[in-house]
Length: 110
Image (cartoon, rainbow, N blue to C red; front, side, top):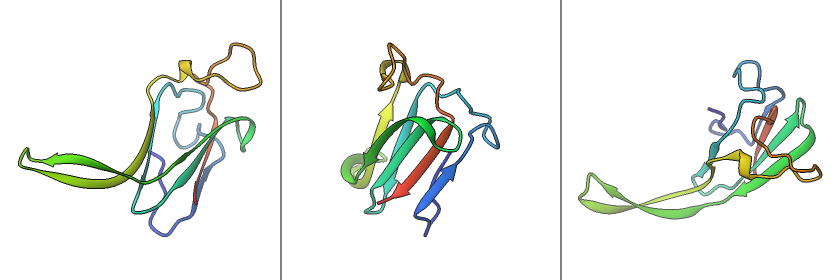
């Protein structure tokens, strides 16, 4: 789990191998934002934020959910989920997907 702590504006992981053990092992993910924020997520092919980059901005929306099946609650948050990185093409390459390619990550609050 990678997340911005309260008061942080940026989180950087130069290499997912340490301490996460996730270098080139990502097949799917979900990214969220909370509390009236929007976050830029940048996923890089190589360590130290180099080579190809898959980036996206997650902004606030309001989702309606049920509280114990009794009443609807408005839950403000933004989300972007990618269930299969095999379906996301790496721009600038021939027939390559983002599956098992992510090595470094940067999350920036906008």
